[in-house]
Length: 370
Image (cartoon, rainbow, N blue to C red; front, top):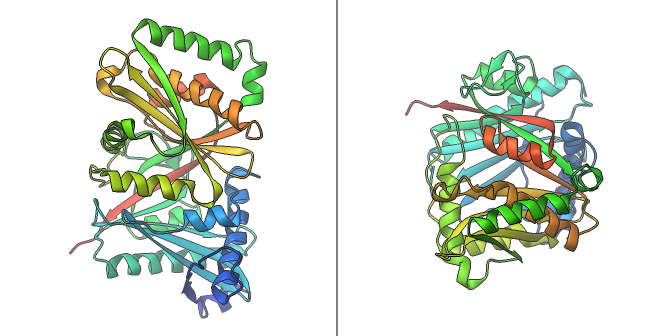
């Protein structure tokens, strides 16, 4: 399919999710084609295995929730899906925001790929406008530095990269760059200071300062649910967001339960470690991992509240959950995580833990006049 022919025949379709991943219907077949496309995009952007999901995991990941509506749009070449977009519409806070990401396979001819990206961005903006969204966010590949620097001063992008170019042409500004990093537990075991020794040292320091760790798998125990809601709310305002127009979140028990259900759907396991102040019983921070079918676990949020910083708890939480991962999921030796480039403290903790950079993602934004 040539770029010239495609320019006159691009058809962008809504992907209707099936009830089950193996459903023998048109929706099931379309979803499986989209899954295969998603796997190809993951390898192109991050390398083999780092973003791989099973059909069941991807079906769960693409579901909407009370907190966020997800729309999936696809472009086909025959039965094969060659390009797609995801559009996220926050439903509880930041309800003026429409967030989108597009992807066109690298094997396409350059002019075809550019045309698809342009069409998908226009389509995503139209969908966002239909929902009254006046702040648009988009994503693109990025780097530690580039000709276009993020407003935070950390990270940049190549303005000639097709996804970035489409956003720049529409008036988006690069607000933030995220770094994907990966740690390999097998390497941590072979270092001069193995994982267990480092964890023991961090635990001893925390214990001397009056802290202990508690670990669990799955939903938060009943006695910790109010504190976990508060920690998620703190995460929504504490994590660096650059100039992105994101509002503080409010977490009810229903929202926490839905988050836990969605993150463990498709066969995934959620592992959480919290740090507790023994004197007060207060939870000082947490970190969580999601473990799926591949050999790579996904690091999710990590936070230590301001009142409890300065005791090495961030490092303790990271190391403790890696120990939990190795103990309970020995077939998952690698862990991936995403952090804002300006979050230098957390990046320093990650680097000291053993994470190394593998990819970067840019977050762009523009405001639309009412």
